[in-house]
Structure formats: structure tokens, C-alpha cells
Amino acid sequence: MELHNIRKPMSAIILSHPETRDPISPEDFFQQSKLFVEKQLDMLLQENTVPSQQLISAARYSLLGESKKLRPMLLLAAVRTLGGRVEKALNTACAIEMIHTYSLIHDDLPCMDDDDFRRGKPSLHKAFSEAHAVLAGDFLLTYAFEVIANDPLLTNIQKVKLIALLAKNSGAEGMIAGQVLDMEAEGKTIGREDLQEIYQYKTGALITASLEMGGIIADASKPVLQALQNFGNDIGLAFQIVDDILDVTSSVAKHGKKVSSDVTNDKMTYVKLFGIEKAKLTACKLIESGKRHLEEIPGDHHLLISLADYVTK
Amino acid sequence: MELHNIRKPMSAIILSHPETRDPISPEDFFQQSKLFVEKQLDMLLQENTVPSQQLISAARYSLLGESKKLRPMLLLAAVRTLGGRVEKALNTACAIEMIHTYSLIHDDLPCMDDDDFRRGKPSLHKAFSEAHAVLAGDFLLTYAFEVIANDPLLTNIQKVKLIALLAKNSGAEGMIAGQVLDMEAEGKTIGREDLQEIYQYKTGALITASLEMGGIIADASKPVLQALQNFGNDIGLAFQIVDDILDVTSSVAKHGKKVSSDVTNDKMTYVKLFGIEKAKLTACKLIESGKRHLEEIPGDHHLLISLADYVTK
Image (cartoon, rainbow over all chains, first blue to last red; front, side, top):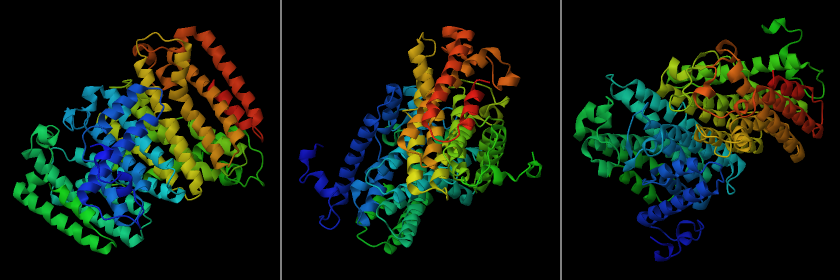
């Protein structure tokens, strides 16, 4: 879609001032936000006048490939819902996508999950090399923090809060913890509580962070940040359960990565514990529970509700 | 060394107020700073109440092992030289050691330099597993930014400047660039300029960053930050040339890692280009050039001069 094909210039729709902006449909918002994020990611990786083009090519291969951009969407939707300026959140949205992408690159390595496909094409270590995959992942992780620290539209206190929150939720109290716990549970019989804990850290932490970071950019109050966190916890867990279901029901073409990799890696999943039907039911219940937390948040919730529904699709 | 064995309590010596503090010998300063940094690193990895103790054990294995702590020393010495408060710099000193350590962990991986020994003991991927090494490296990289963002003694503007500088110098315009260029140059014949560029990024960038970060914490002026950067460029390059020399002359026991790994990996080095004697001479000249830059910095330079001399020992 070209800019001139949109009825109104994109900037007038998603970047308009909170007090003068028109209502927007979820479809328009997500389509336009995705384009904006992709354009900004592209720019951030060009701007970076680095000595090794090979490193940037590797990072671009993974970062600019097909992706739902769920985490940036959650962040931007939270900002818009709370009456904040979406343009202030664009770099942070890119930063969270960089963190998510680096985690996938490292997770696919032979010494980790050993996945040869990701997002419908060869994983980075297959397309380039293992060493490039390690370093491109390290770069994206580092660059995420640099992008926030250098953002010209955020205040210093916002930057510090965003960096602290992103680091916490992607580190040893968040995503990385989940990956270690996940790896250590391989081949073991674990129950629902342990599995939920792994999911909470591995997937939930970054999804929750995306929403809370949107709250920080929109200068949300503590109760609102808490409500966003509760919403994120529920839809994050639902998202991982849906991923378990897709792992056994989908095709490489549709799911974009090797199907049944959880089976190959002897990992416990919600589907193995409860079967597909019960897993689907749990995901739906979590989405409903998540939506109830939105009632504690001011504003029109239709964008966040759409994203919650999108998780189970 | 126990606290009660020091003539004066350590806090009175290295943490004393700039206006009331006594002169300190380089030996006392470095010995005490090293102890403080090690104690703080230990605390930062305990404080972190994380769900996976295995991840913390892996990080501690590499982070708390034998190390010269050169980068933290440079940072703390810069702060002291400029009349700043050393205690304000302790967490940042730990952060830079975390970045340095993560880079060694990832660099030692089989798909990278494939080094089985580091700092006189098995590399992390040999002591734990490759997956633990990838994740512990990711954790230390992430945690470095978190530690600075949560520092209670720094202002928000200082934190943002420190994070931006650290990310830049350890990312695709710094250390990671150096690692990619280094890897891409393997087996190729490169000249002095290309080799110096690789060293500048791979080793110089983080050494320079350590000094500049000390300057930021001491609220140094731009010309002083520039002088610190120039000093860092020279001693950083000297440090890498000395490392090349040690790679062919030292033993595992002394150097702490596999000797002649550069030969095994078919890497170009200063020693291969110019021979040991010329390499030694170049390192000495760089140290002298570095010291001259200190003249543009106010205060007593004896700590930074000692560190410059230490690089060639």
C-alpha cells in the first residue's frame, strides 16, 4: 500500500493530536502502525552508519522480514488508548521489536532450539552463519537501548523508566529467565503451574512490557500501568497457548517455522498437558479475563480489545 | 585482604569527598577499587531475585572470576582524577565489566573463536553449556543497562548519556563491529590500517567508553571528554597490541587462555605484520602519545598514568 492510497495522509490519522483526532478503525490503525514501524525500523538500520554492512544486512534480514509486529502494535495501541502521541512511541515500538527479534535469532541457534526456519524463511544462522546470528542478536539487543536513549521526543525520566522496564522484562527476571527455565524443563514432566511460570517469563514479560511502556509514554498513572500489566499477563499467556496449538496443527507455510518443534525438542506444552480443545478454551478464557482488566483504564478500548482478539486468531 | 587490615577504612580513602580526601597511591586505589567493584558485582548478582539460579550461577562463573577489571579501573580513575565521587560510579563500573564479560563469553563460543579456556579456567560454554553461555551473555548485556537505569546516585540526564554512550561503543559502531570485522578478516591478508580499525572497534571502543563514562559521572566538559577519548584510543590500541604479543609469548597459566589462538584461527595480528620487537615499540609509543593527551585534563594524572603503564605490563 502506498501512502497516496490512503484516504487521508497517514500522519493525519495515527499521528494526529489527541484532542483533534478522528476515530479510527482497528484495521486502519494496525495497518498504518505496522507500516510506520516498518519504515522506522528500516530507517534506524540505515541511519546507523556502521563499519560492517554484513552485520546490518544480517540484522535487517531478521528484523524486516515478515512479522505480525504484535508487540509494537500493543505499545502503540496503549499510547493511543491513553490519549498519548503515537509519534512519541515509534522508536520505542521499534526497540521492543528489536528485542523480540534478537530473542528469536538466538533461540533458533543450533545450541538452543535448533530451528532452521523462522517467519517462513531460513533462520538467520542458516542464511548467514552462526557467528553472524550471535552477533546480529547482540547488536539488536544493544541497539534497542541506544534507540530509546537517543529518542528526541521523550523526556529523560521517560527514557530511564522505559529502559529499566524493558531491561527487567527482557532479562533474568523476564524473557531470558523464561528461556533458561524452558530449556531446563526439556524432557521433564512438569505441571500447569511450572508451565505457566515459564510462559509468563518467556512470552508474557515482553508483551506486558510493551503495554506498560506505552503507558509510560502516555504518562499513565500507577493504577493504569497496573491494569495494563494485568491485561498483558492474560493475553501473553493466551498467546503462548495459541502458539502451542499452532505448533501441532499448522503448516510451515502458515506458521512460518518448523511444525512440531516442541515435540522434537521434547518440550512440555499446554496441548500435551490438556489436549487441543482444553487449550483453546483456556486461551479464550484468558482473553476474556484480560479484557475485563481494561475496564480500569480510561478511554476507548476498541484497539486493545481488537488486539486481544487477534491473539487467538 | 580484610577491611580491618587496611590502615584506614576503605570508604575513607577511595570514597572520601573530593574536597577533604587525602592523596592516594595508585596501588592502594586500584587494590581498593577492585575490591569494591568485585563486592558490588557480587551484590548486584545476588540482589537479582531471579527465577533461574542456573542462569545467575553461569553469569557469576564468568563475571566473578579472575580479571584485571581494567575497564572499571579506568572509569573509576577518570572520576577520581576529575574530582568526582567514586561511589557514584560503582554501578556503572560494574555495568561496563558486565558488557566486557558478555563479549568474552560469546566470543569464546564454538561458532566464534572456539576458545575452551578463559581467565585460567574452562570457558563458560565448557563449564556449563553452549546454550547457557548464549543466555548468560545476553543476560549480562541486558543487565548492564538495567543497572545504570536503576542507579540511585546518578541523575536521569547522566543515566541517559551513559546508556547512549555505552550502547554506541559496545554495538555496531563499536565492539560488535570489531568482532564482525575481525571474523570477516580471518584468513585474509590485511594491512596496518585495516587491522588498526578492527582493534579500534573491537577493544578500543569499550576502553574509550570507560574513560568517557567516568567523565560523564564527574560532569566533565566537552574538551575533557574529548581528551579522555584520545587517551583511550591510544591506550586501547596499545592494549590490543600487547594482547597480540602475549598470544605468542605467554603460557596458558599466565595468559589465562589458549596460547596462539590467533594463529589457530588464522587471524592477522600486529606481531604477524611487524614482528614482536616492532609491536612492543609501537605499544610503548602509543602509551606515551596517550599520556600527552592527559595534559588537556585538569587535576592530578598519576592514576591514569599508572593505568596506561599497566597496559603494557
